[in-house]
Image 1 (cartoon, rainbow, N blue to C red):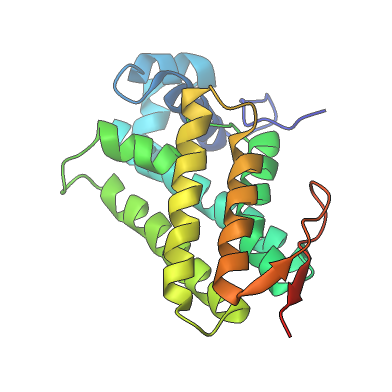
Image 2 (image 1 turned 30 degrees about the vertical axis):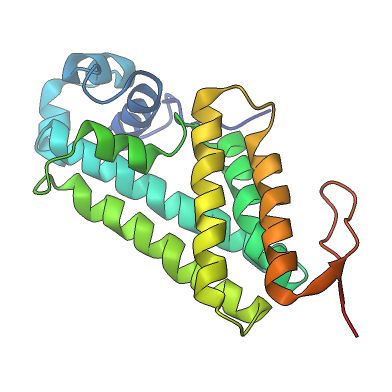
Amino acid sequence: MKQRTGATPAASPRNRLLDAADELFSRDGIARTSVDQVLARAQVAPGTLYAHFGGKDGLIVAALRRRLDRWDEAWQGAVDAAASPADKLLALFGAVSAYRERYTPGRGCAFLATRTELPAPDHPAQEVIAAESTLLRTRLNHLAATVTADRPEALARDVLLVYDGAMAGLLRGSEPDPLRHGRAVASRLIQAAVGAEWAPPDQGATLGLRLKS
């Protein structure tokens, strides 16, 4: 059974508020979700929300920060489980699928969606959004450097661009499996970056690279 972040009777009031915010903001958007809707979904009194978060903006930031922590953990876990340097770089795409299976999927990238809805540079959510971008760039740069010594930053940027496109594909809905497609495109980028003769693996199998002699 899939584990979702919907509120449960055993959850604390604070976690029920975070669960409700995550679900409603992801499904309906931040602007269209009122505080009253969050309170009703979480089954808590208004005073509880203000005591824990100070208001809607504080709740937005806390829910986004928890999402970032969970995403960081899920992605790192996928990297640790991957066998080869190339697979560790490609683990980004499988990590998204695993995250979406376990938690509220979101409308594409929740961080970019939040930035679209809350563009003001002084909104407190901007700090969390920036932290997610930093995490992506830093980890991808590190992983790309283990794949190739020839301009790994360029490879990391290319993989990030494919990732952003795959996340947009989730929102567009026209591609049956944009994450799987994104992984395949990123595989070809790795092939080009390492100057390898590549034997395509079975879908979902370990990436196979045969270096040219």
